[in-house]
Length: 161
Image (cartoon, rainbow, N blue to C red; front, side, top):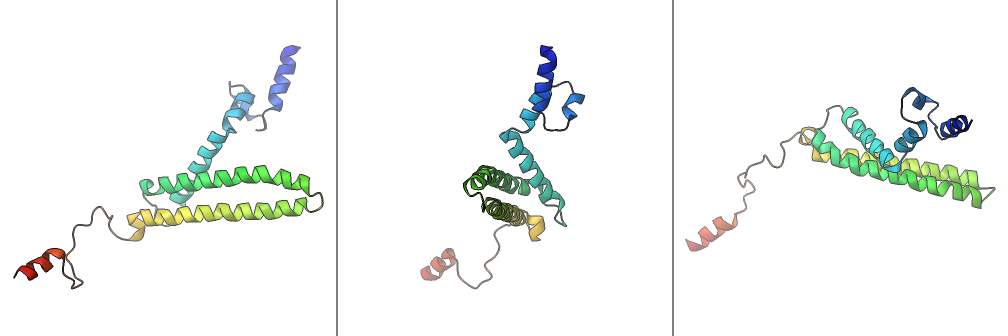
C-alpha cells in the first residue's frame, strides 16, 4: 500500500503528462532536472542559437552566433524569472486591477524579451563577416594610405630632408 501511495505522489510531481513513465527514470527526478533553472537557461540559450542559425537568409558562422545567443538567452531567461516573480505579487496586491496590471507586465516582458532577441541578432550580424559582406578584420592586411594624409614615418622623412 505504501508503494502505491508513493507512486501516486511521485506522479503528481510530474507535469509532463505522463511521458516520464515510458523511461526507467522516476518521473519526479526527470521533471525536476528538466525544469531546474540551469537546464531552463541552457534550453533557452540553445533555442536562441537555433533561431540565429535558421532565421537569417544567409546562415552566420556558429562562432559569431554563440556569444550573442548566450547573452540574449540569459537575458530572456532572467526576464522570464522576473515576470514569474512579479506577476503573482501584483495580482495579490491589487484585487481589482491585478489582472489588468499582469497583462501589462506580460506585454512589457514580451517586449523586452524580443528586444533582447533582436539586439542579439544585430550583434550576430556585426560579428559575422559573411553577413557583413566583407572579410574578417583579422584577414585585412595593412592597406595603403589612400586618404592623402601622411603617416608619421613619411612626415619625419619629409622633415629630415
